[in-house]
Amino acid sequence: MEITTIKEKVSNVLTTILEHSNFEMSDELTAKDVDGWDSLSHMMIITKIEEEFGIRFKLRELNKLKNMGALVSLIQSKS
Amino acid sequence: MNLVFDIQKSIEKHYDRNAFCIGQEYHTYKEFAQIISNIRKTVRSKTEENEIAIGLVTNDDIQTYASIIALWLEGKAYVPLNSEFPLSRNQMVIGQADIRTILDSSNEKIFSEYQTITTKELNTFPVDLTPLRVSEENLAYIFFTSGTTGTPKGVPITFSNLSGFVDAFWALDYPITEEDRCLQMFELTFDLSVMSYLAPILKGACVYTIPKEEIKYSYIFELMEDYELTFSLMVPSILHYLRPYFEEINCPALKYSLFCGEALPLDVTEEWSTCVPNATIANVYGPTECTIFCTDYTYVKNAENKTHNGVLTIGRDMKNTSTIIVDKDNNEVAVGESGELCLSGAQLTPGYWKNKTKNKEAFFYKNYQGKNTRFYRTGDLCNIDAEGDILYLGRVDFQAKIQGFRVELSEIEYHAKAALDKVNAVAVAFTNTIHNTEIGLVIESEVTDTKELLEYIKTKLPSYMIPSQIKHVQSFPLNTNGKIDRKKLKEMFS
Image 1 (cartoon, rainbow over the protein chains, first blue to last red):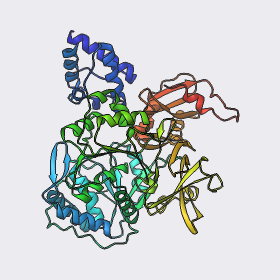
Image 2 (cartoon, helix red, strand yellow):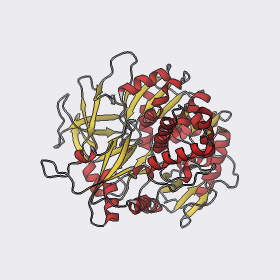
Image 3 (tube, rainbow over the protein chains, first blue to last red):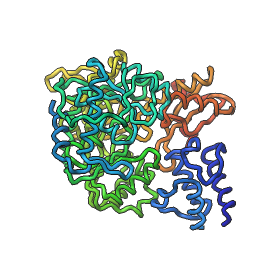
Image 4 (cartoon, one colour):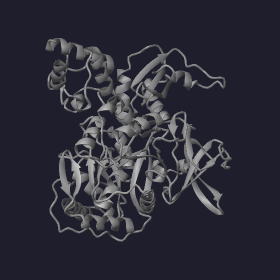
């Protein structure tokens, strides 16, 4: 899948779960930079991404997700 | 004062061993002793003898933990201040506890308007861990919990309370030795953190903490596997997060897996027990007022466990606590009948900090086994069976537990109403799809933009108290007593 398509889909997931779109989809974006992205919403975001892309993350992979760039390339490697 | 002397002895005995693993960096007890000594000397020179409580910025580093021990050696109490909490809330705490000095390990001072001792760059002093001789009735810490009227209430805990807890904890026989690797997953404003650092320090074991920027549940799992943790105390909400990944988890090194702070469902516990095949699993219970926890139940594998609505029993009172269940006139109810759980004993706080009204409501004297005894009303609805096991049935008031933190729903409503200008609002706690508790807010109005409201609440309340969902209704449904039907409002969320 194209990187841009993945980014767009992830951005939609964030907007749906967090109920706002006050973020820039840069590779350096981290949960800290986004309002309302805490442990709880993180769980919901991850679950929604798994649904959207029809993939499944391993717990260990989740720890390596330091920023948006890492998330997008992980999704790309799995889909 | 035996407890603080025991801390001294243990640190001195285990100089060569690791005390902490923080962000993958180890610190030995020797290093810990040096930092403690530097901080205590500075505290002694910069604070007055009559300063009872000292503020502590709750960072995740060796200086912050050393600050706690340093204050105890000096016979002083710490009051944890989370820099991520709204400034107005922290100022309220600082004011209430008469804090004049704050210990801070941050690179830049968090509270610039108070005398701050920056603990990162202190002069080196000779190591001296000998505690001052002070009364057992001196305070070890004051923790502030959610209050009903928008003001947090302080729970002071004495060294005598804390000694009572430590004594009762060892009596449970979930032993820790210098070989153990123990999890400390709690923010230092939460009293379960005290058990999580103190018990390992008393035995020369190593404490593993969670860096603030990490997603807690997945980091805990990595620590458990990669560092082969042997002892953990967690809130059950971590299990709900980890549950979808249980198949990937295998931690044979874990010997004890304790849970506290929220209801522990039996089914999740059973599944968890296969992830930690060699661990004894226990459900412990207790409010901050009764020092960390005070009842205990050991889960039995492949056998019957007592439950109510699928929630595990909280077991029996520990060695230094007495429990009774009373009706609204403070009379003990018969075996099996439900009532409010009340606690007394060595772990019980002397009373809320400077809050006579609350103390009158929450504490009462009663003749118990021939003695006039002071009891604390927990607000928890329980019953005790014939064997003495306590079953948790629910709350008698409007408190909720969010990730183990106690939340007064009325405190959220108080701030929401202040922002809404005469529009009514009700906060409810509901269970989400992964069985964790979330806060919903229902506003009695047309659908409006809630951005400003949320912005306002965020300046008043810590993040775990911010509603995660907001709904609007034209008018609140009423129940048969003519009161707002909170149950119906709760059903709006899922």
